[in-house]
Image 1 (cartoon, rainbow over the protein chains, first blue to last red):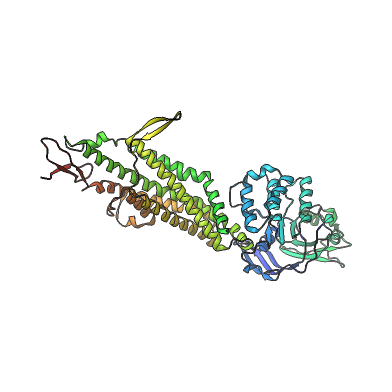
Image 2: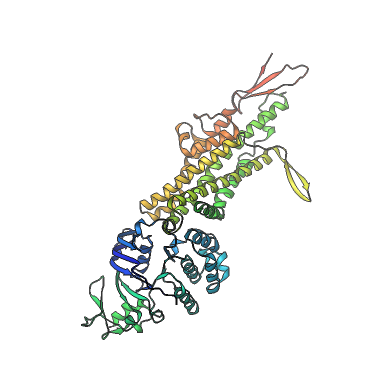
Length: 270
Length: 303
């Protein structure tokens, strides 16, 4: 693994973000991302909104994001700074994937040959001559991940990069992600990768609030409980009132939950 | 460089859009066909020549006929060019709307600044419109020339190739081209305004209707100006496109008091068809159509 120790790279200050006419999905996020990071949370917790906000494409936003000391709102024409794998960043054309990828990577200062190699190895070569709209969800995930990774950006944001992938492809994608020299910020609801990314940081996101950072090992050692716990390492505030406590002693071990989508299920049955 | 990349990408996207080709070219070619063979089924030189006094020399009738079908073709071309451009705008509104997030992303994290991006995109949209209209212009010329003048099939290296007896070409092709480019610019800005309004008003559900707005307006105003009324309606930007194309194609005057279909007739009114020939018993004559195609043709002795 080609990991580098970095100073504070992305700072979120009192971030509120959401969609038109709705309540804010992110509700006052204050955090710092200092290196390869996993944003772990159940579906609907605001992971994708956080990614959109970091990329500067959220519908409504309050607060500040500082990337490498520069306010993200004033960032313009900065190739190789940030890249992402969100579909809405790329779904502007019905042209074959190869044309869309060449266009993006050319403008962003990326590496098309690496993209092509990645898609051919992990996906299928014929993907290149089809449009994004025609691909299966899994193949589309591979193309979008490859676009983000091949852009040679300093920070790569990957939203659910394993969504709809079969186990073999999941491992192959994870391997490419860990090989990348960029700072990776990856959102997911699955916990299977925590064991493999021991030196990354984990931020928990639950109902629009971000907690952490923790190391994956620390998180896997924690247990979830609805009842107040004295030695709680973290307490997560729920929108409907009440809190959830993470401690080393009481509750259901996080390591026993394969997806944080089951968080509410676990809490209900406790 | 970035402008060139954006231009090439969007032009490729626009020109490979099957729906655009169907609505902007194939569907419009269908209406051109209707104009030539259905609405114009009774327009023949035989019928046309009946309006002339007996004994009118054939050269005079031929000249009047060629002028008449030039006006008829120009009228159809003007209308169809307008409707074709407005069908392109449906696609453009959608392109612009769905490009807003990618554009925001790319202008932040690539070499393409906002100005470069919009320059490339605007040029691509205008080129796309011009390409569609040139294809329609060629279809118009070939279809109407075949319909009114006919063609012979000649063998060319074993392939049957139609050779047209005469081509109904625009009288002022530069004017037609300039009108097309200017109209393309207008249509692009109408499309982007509509798309941005949908975004600014935060009404994404209105996109479907909004994207058809330029199309609806050009049909409504265009058809009204074409067959129903003259006057101020001709000053709508859509009608101006129609009128300018008609004007440059036929090299005729525009009579703003009348709908365009009447202009075809009025434009011919007062036209003089001079033919100098010698027939033993007939002096040199000037022929003028005095009151339209349904009226009489008067002979004026030139002494």
